[in-house]
Image 1 (cartoon, rainbow, N blue to C red):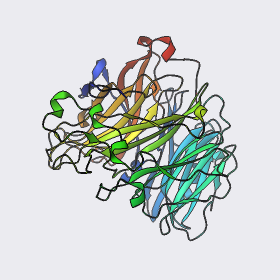
Image 2 (cartoon, rainbow, N blue to C red):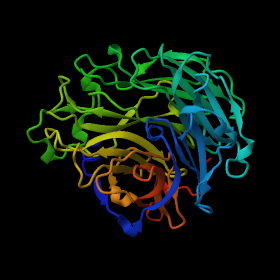
Image 3 (tube, rainbow, N blue to C red):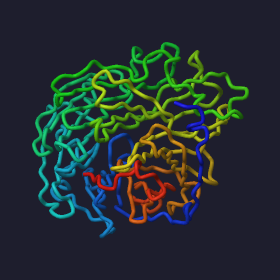
Image 4 (spheres, helix red, strand yellow):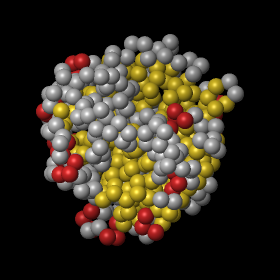
Amino acid sequence: MRKTLTALLLAIVVPAVAGHGQTVARNTVSSHVIPESLTGPARKVMRLSDGRILASFEIKREGGTVASLYAASTASPAWRNVSAKLSDLKAVDVASDTGPAGTYVAFVDAATGTGSVARFPDPLGHGDAASIFNDLTPAGGAVTETFVAASKGEESTNSVAYAWRNRGTGEIYLGYSPDGQTFGKARVVAKNEHPGSGPILAVHNNYILLTYLSRDRSNRPEKVEGDVGFPVWMESWDGGNKWSDPKPLFGTTITGFPKAEEVLRDSDAKGRALPLYAAGGAQVASNALAWAQLEIGARIFITTEQALVTAEGRLPGTARPVAGLVSFKDLSDGPGAPWHHVFASEYNPNVKDPNQRHNTAFQYSALPGSSIRAVAYLQQAPSGEAREGDRIAVAVSINTGKSFDRTVKFNPASLGLGAGERLVFTTSTCLLLKKDGAVYLDAAYLDPKAGTVRVAQLPLGVNVKNLPPSLFNVSARWP
C-alpha cells in the first residue's frame, strides 16, 4: 500500500442532477418490502453483462412474508415479478445470486425453520420453470442468515455454494452444488459460538471461501474491547470436502493490522495519537467475492469495516472512526497465498467529533472483463441531522482494487427522496457498462414515505473509452 492512495481521493458530492452531466436513472421495483431484507452481506441485486438485472426481497403478506424475485433488462426496464411458485412459500432471510446456469434464491422456510434454495434457469424468459430444493438443513435447526454464491466467468463450472447459521448452536451449515442444478443437504463445516455475523461465501468452481465475523476473544487483539467482531476465514479447494482451519484475517496483533496513515492527510494527522491501526473491530458484516480472471483463476476478495484505534487498542477520541478495507489474494498462488489489504473509503478527519458521519455497510462490486472495481458504503448522518441526511459513497478503483482513488457521493435528493432521509440500500455485485462507455452501479434502496423499493443507476464518473486498452477487455461477458 502507498500513502495518499485513499488520502487523495477525489470526492464528488452528487446533487439531484448527478455529476458528469447525467441524472440518476430510477425505477420503482416493489412495495411492501421489509426494510431488513435490503441490509446485510447477502447479495440481493445482480446486474448481468447482457443487460438483465435481478433483485430478491422479502415481501409483507398477510400471515407472514414471502421471498420474491424481480427482473428487468435494458431493453425492458419495467420491473416484473418473476417469483412463480416461490411466492407460495413463507420465507425469511432471503439471499440471491446469478451464475451461467441460472439465478438462485436461498431462504429460510418459516414453516419448517430449514434452509431452501430455488433455481430459476431463465427468470425473464421462463420464470415458471423454477425448481425448489427444500429442507437442505436439519429439521428443528432454526437456521438464519442465509448466503448463496454462484461461480462466474468464462470457464465457470456453474458451481453454487449456500450456507446458513444455526441460531442456537452457532453451527454453520454449508452445501455445494457442482453444476448449479442439483442441490444436496448442507452439512456443518464450522462453529461460530460468538457470532458477529452469519456465513459469507465466495466460490470459484471447486474453490469455496467461508468467512464470518467472530466475537471470540481468541480471534481479536487482546487490547481491543467492545462488542465488535473480527473477520475469520477458511477455505476448501475440493468443493467443501476438506477445509482449512479458521484463521483471523488480520491476525491478532494490533500492529499487524493496516496502518491508518495510508488514509490520513497531513492536516488530519496533526494532534492525533499516531500511529492508528484499522484494528478496532466491526459492528456490521460486509461481503466476499470470487472474481474470475485469466491466468490467476480468480481473485478472492473480502470486504470489511474496521474501527481505527491506537497501538493500545483505544479509540483516538470520543467518536469511533471507521474505515473500509478490501483484502484480496489470487488463487493461482495456492493455499499459502498472502492476503493484501487496501483502504477503500474516505477517512473522516473529525475523529474527536461525536457528530461526524459514520461509515458502515461496505459492499464490493466489479465490472466484468475490466480492471474497474467499486466499494459502496453508507455515510450515516448523526442523529438529528436533517439538512443533508445520509449519503451513499462509492470508492472507485481502475486497477483491480489495488487502490481506490476516486469517491462519488449521492445524497437523498439525487435518489428522489426527501432531504434528511435515512438511507437503507444494497448494491449489485456487477457494475453496469453502457454503450457510451460510462460505468454505473445499480443500487436498490427504500423509499420510506412511499413504502416502495427503487433501483437507481449511480454514475461513477468513469468511462472505459478514456482507459488504456489493457484495462478493459470488451470480449469478457458474465454470467
